[in-house]
Image (tube, rainbow, N blue to C red; front, side, top):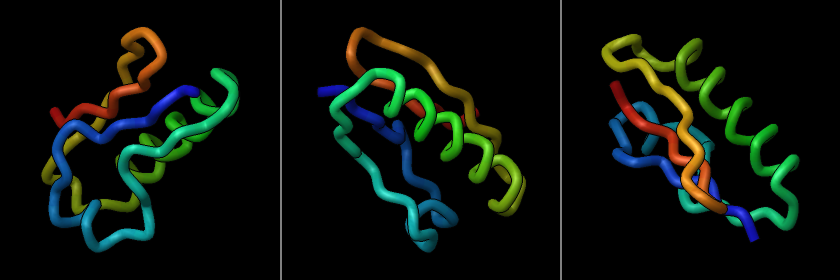
Length: 65
């Protein structure tokens, strides 16, 4: 299992339809979903923060910058 974890949930994230701590069966699916989430968060949220993706073993970590 591969996980997608949002390091810190801002207000925009909590109000969105996105979920934290997702688990997917394949690395490719997890990476694709994590990239979609980062793109959506950077484009659709209020622009107070920026978000980046880091890979740590079987976890894709979305960090707030």
